[in-house]
Length: 208
Image 1 (cartoon, rainbow, N blue to C red):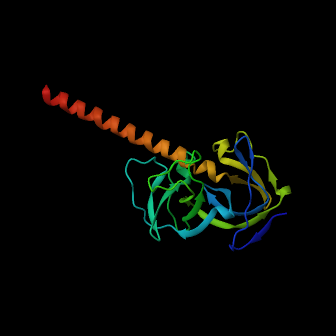
Image 2: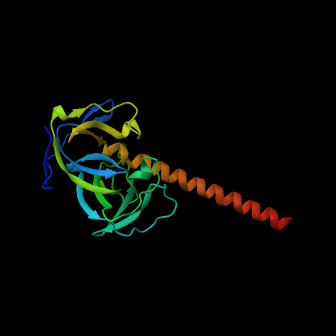
């Protein structure tokens, strides 16, 4: 049975694993809109919800990282979830929000540029925040292997809510520090390569 509630102190929705893939468990979840679809994240993973604010753009980042914000002295990267799902960038509107999600650190124990290998906050841009729901075991179906419109490993379950299905996301996969770091490095290498090719072409033109 699905139960609506307001945002209060979270109760953890623990995630079981299936070969390293998180499986949604009964608990409380925050639902939000993205591209006309409803998604959910475990409430304990969420530390803050705020109105959209201007971002500081950081060069040489993957296209889905829109920039960073200063959150009480912490530099927090902000991910455009639509771009992360390969659906273009989010169109900013009145209800556009940033949800701060606490994610696990690097799985191999390495540290990031801040010297921290533990958890860290990452912001996600969503079209609108809906509500907090409680999902029981009977409300959750296993994640599909295809057909959901996003990568299968991003999904930890399908929840029956208000007569429709809600996609429950696996925050550790969607906001994987390892993957985003690798994509950032690839983006930087690609842009450096393009810059080098342009410089070579300019030099050749001058020599001729």
